[in-house]
Length: 247
Image (cartoon, rainbow, N blue to C red; front, side, top):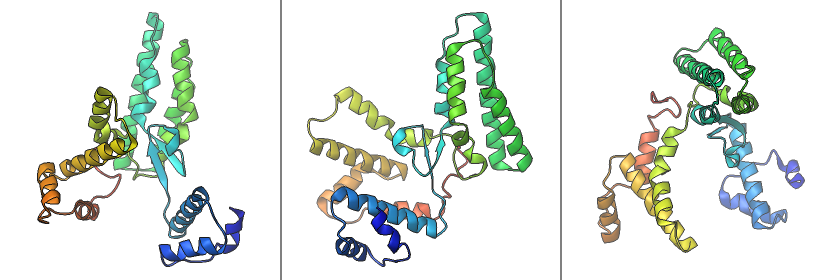
């Protein structure tokens, strides 16, 4: 991608102009063109003041840009540890109690942030991950928390971030259950069809619309049912991303 460095100050007014530019400089291959396009879009967002942060349950494919992680998923290694004596039972209870206490303080911080509260939360997290429990499974869990400390505490600098991704997971839970029961589809076309209709149904439900009426309207061509894109755009005008009270 070194070939693009000399064009950092060039602006493109349309997708057609961008594609023509790639043709002019001899940028070929679908993968190279895709990577160049992604880099151009990312650079444009940065130039316009956007600070991109991704949020996930720790899946590697989402570890791009600045990356924050889900607290619910981060707690699972501690919860899955199997204590073998009373001391380890107490250690697990203490670790989980301390972990969720920090979580509650983070929720309070989002509602009323201050430098003092942020410092206390960071100190509490340091104390948790430095604890010696005498249980190898718990120590592995705490070591895992230490690795993703910055990603879990990124919310201290980005209040718009949620603390968990349960809302996103609930959107695909039904689809995943059906896939497990049916064993998937026999072809790529079948998978795309299933994914498309599952997404349409979930979107209709999300906005309080009848999926059956949506299908009837589209199949008959009556044109009386609203466009889902319009519903999404209308909702996006007043919903502040990441600031919903459910987080």
